[in-house]
Length: 105
Image 1 (tube, rainbow, N blue to C red):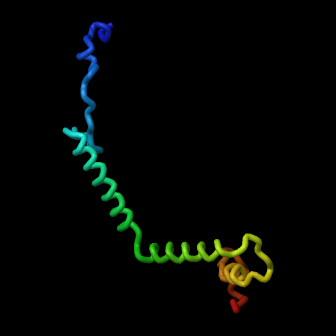
Image 2: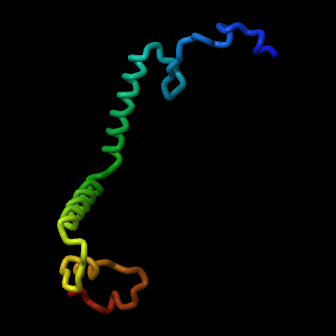
Image 3: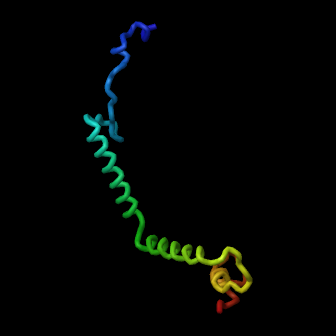
């Protein structure tokens, strides 16, 4: 009932859109809003870069190189695939009773 008595201006029709940052503060112009967005993206990339250590980056690079080598191989695997056999032999398995008794050659 009260809403029906309000004029269009009181309801907000035709009002400008209010842009706010992530902290709820009002941004005066769209340029400031866009600059803030670009700054957040750069800060996020920097945060992600600092969030991972040297070992993780090296590990990721090794994994990507291994995946590139695997992509060059044929899809079908056979018994005499030396790379696959070596990788499976190196894998440690939890609860393997023979793991400590048999030496890897």
